[in-house]
Every structure is written in C-alpha cells, then in structure tokens.
Image 1 (tube, one colour):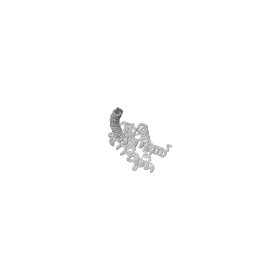
Image 2 (tube, rainbow, N blue to C red):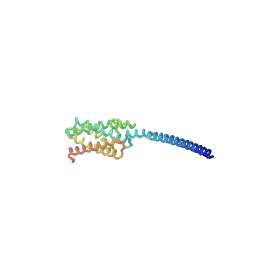
Image 3 (tube, rainbow, N blue to C red):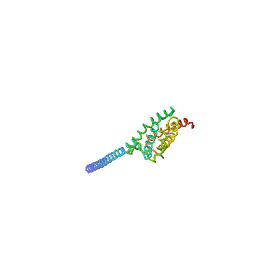
Image 4 (cartoon, rainbow, N blue to C red):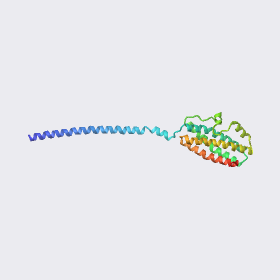
Length: 213
C-alpha cells in the first residue's frame, strides 16, 4: 500500500512538473514574440523620422527668407550697376575704391541668393525687371535718379553717388535686420549679419567723405 501511494505521488509530481514546463515555455515564447515585435516596432519608429531629419539637415526656410532673397537680388544688382559707373566718372580715389569693394562683395551674394531661390523652387527676379513696388523697397533708386547719376562726372558724380548709395545701403541694412528677426534659414541670417556689418561701415565711411560726421 505504501509503495502504491509513492508511485501515485511520483506520477502526480512528474505531471505537475511537465505542466509547469509547458506553461513556462508558452510564456517564454510569448515574451520572445512580444519582445521581437516591440524591438521591430522600435526599429521602424526610429527609422521613420529619418527623411524628416534629412530634410531638416538641409536647412528649413520660411516666407521671410524668400522675401529677403527676392528683394536683395534686384537691390544688389542696382548697387553693382551704380558701382560700375564709378571707374569712368568718379574723381575721388576713395569713391572708386568704395565702388570696387561694393561690387566685389555684392556680385557673389547675388549668385548665392539666386541659388537659394532656385533650390526652394522660387522664381529668381529677372534682370532689368523693375516695377514701382521695387522703387519703394529699401532705398532703391528710380530710373530718373539712375539717369542723373549716369550723366554726372567728377566731383558731382562723387557727391551724387555717395548720397544715393547711403540711402541704398540704409535700405539694405533694414532688409537684413528684418531677415535676422523673421527668417529661419541659417545661411540667409548669416548673410544678413554680414550685410549689416559691412554696409553700416560703408555708410559711416561715405558720411565721413561727405563731411557729414
């Protein structure tokens, strides 16, 4: 009788152990599947933002950046056009050098600004295209003023050139300050800072040459 009870107990223990093993295996399998699924979800989640991150690395821009580039392209073009008149008309060596410096700085910026607009899918202002809205923008000269400058020479040219360029530069500085406060595109904000620094210094120089400081 004792032996029979021992066998029954042993059989019950083996059955219980087997059942426990099955339960553990089932749980372990569930955990494994769940873990794999969780890891797979994480991998997908971590890779999903990649395109957005790549886009962000190229630099975000906003409407203020577009307005800055579209406005500064014709603005710079006119400054270069004014500067091109100096070699054959200016009397002062300082004015000739100033005009050369203006052209040297602004010609490359026109190309950079145009490149930004193209990369943003925006239209680059056409060369020679002037409308009345541009005359009100940032110290732009009217056609009459440009004709007046073209017809001047010697000291009269120097005086007219500097007087007009001071207003022109003041407009550019104002546009650049707007870009720094409202823009989002880092390279454009950096260029705006350089414009403020260089053209403010040139305004000071021209005021000195005109005896206004």
